[in-house]
Length: 287
Image (cartoon, rainbow, N blue to C red; front, side):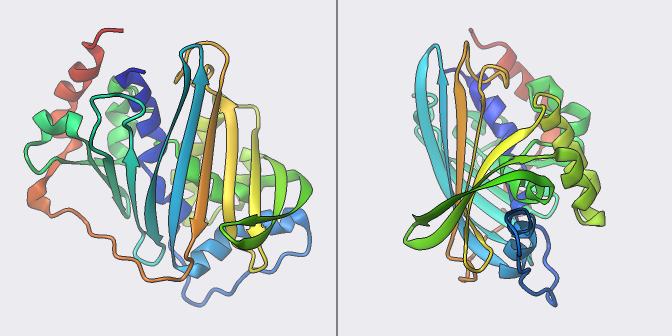
């Protein structure tokens, strides 16, 4: 596995807070009367819960074999903050320290040891959606920052839903649904003030997919406890040959207090300050 895989995976993670859009304090839990309604209510119900914790796992299969890795984090919809600590040791032997991600509103902060020569001892790199739109392509990151956890917002476009049946997730009783997401419908149903950002992300996803298959486990309160997608890893450019990328997102401890600290300005280097060096650090590496 090479650093190019890390680049391909950073793109989905840059806006990990997309699953936690700003909540309306006066909102009430959306009740669902049908499988489609259950899925489409998920993003509003998650926002209404305000806080929670997440665990993400990835499995990538290709001609080089299978690699599995993951991380844990938390979200706060009112503060519009999310954090994720991702262990990439299985991707590259040199990555013996985890990738840290903190999202604060529209700004994402990354700390990865392999970038230390560019970001100094503090090690934090700040990235905005505009950075990706204007220059992300230079290092292989798509404009808009495609985000797998955006699937919660994408569930607004759920269609062709099949109710699989009851299953437990982390000891919580849920019902599993398999569905196909209509990305155009998801955009139409998104909150008006979120559509621009979501459109950029869904455009990137839709460029490689005709539809988005998803499995969702929903509890009695209408909260998603697990979301899973499987995509062609070869078509996405993160593995050679035929293979699958499986991403599983589990959400738990809804409503429990979380502490998400934003890096101090003195510890942060802006993305545009290191763009040229960052691009060279990846394009010069051997295949």
